[in-house]
Length: 63
Image 1 (cartoon, rainbow, N blue to C red):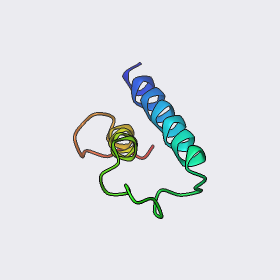
Image 2: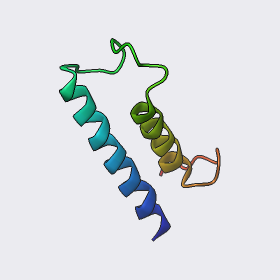
Image 3: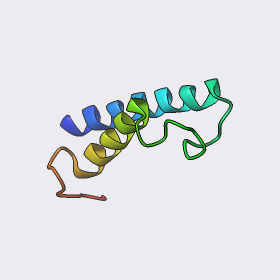
Image 4: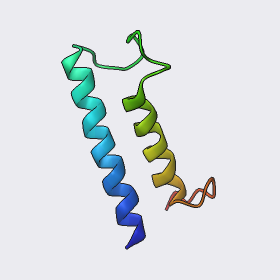
């Protein structure tokens, strides 16, 4: 199912983000000096957006 692809990508990106936070001794990205430019964070945000819209570019389905 296509939805599973979006969920898996979100889980993968979430794990990468958590690993990055742990490696920098942070519980959030906000205090990081790379917050706005961080490629790991950007990839996570994109994956979250895509998982909510199921790849429909903004046509959100929260079911």
